[in-house]
Length: 395
Ligand code: LMR
Image (tube, rainbow, N blue to C red; front, side, top):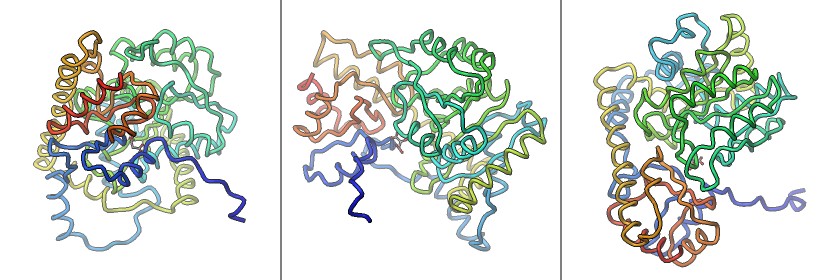
């Protein structure tokens, strides 16, 4: 049977990581997959994580299965971090949380839940978006459609085009919304646009499915969920969140699906159905990463350490944005790169076309995603000159 199966194309992001590992050129640079690196090009384990792991090593009593929806303390702490202490939905008991294997796992639970109960809906996503978004929802049997997001130069949000497209969506459709640090562009709505978007989503009776993978990587932990909170307090919402980036727990696969419903009963029913999706998929989630996050978020000292380490990552990315813009301006003075300074989070749309991206890889050993997305968090003081020389050479 397997002889009838054709080879799948490499993944547009993770496939590049594999190609990078196989590249023997010592000067190679990996700016593809969204992983934070420090200025030494390393992705160290956060100190707060190490401390929490030491405590776990001492205190953990067993390695039993978690419940289908995961660790209880984690499921209480995650919605608080996302929605904030003032959340009306939380106070009214209209919020449930399912621990998931990473943000991708949360999106897949959401997709399965929607596919089982609202199979006729279309799931809208921005064009461009993270390439896995349409795949995940299609894998659950749902139709997907793209709405415009960026202006022609790919440098700013084309808010009117996005809203006009969403006005054409049918009531009962879902729309994937990036909470902050839009992947791949780094271009987010401003406060007024969040308010207007929330109105449109509610007026059209659309279900927001918020992807929150970069809380704290843009402007700050609170600032990065302003739009998320507006949406979640305005009606039914699904939130797929990830701690891969902000806790550096990539391989531990720590995420959550948070459900905000109209009533306690409706939320409980949707929660029970989300658990049914989990049980039929991977039974119950892994415990280590969620235990680490729960230990940190339930301890003031560890939380303080985490906040400082997160701010350190965020500041370094901003410094690299500034350094990149300066270095490119020095090499290609007739081209404006200042927009890269304004983008938020790990990624920037560089404006490089697929041919230039190919040349960077083949001639210079520099790996970026085909769309021209650069992982700014992979730029270091040691690689920035070679990177900018190479980009200038292919422009
Ligand atoms: C990325 O976009 O690079 C990350 O979210 C990693 C992934 O799974 O694609």
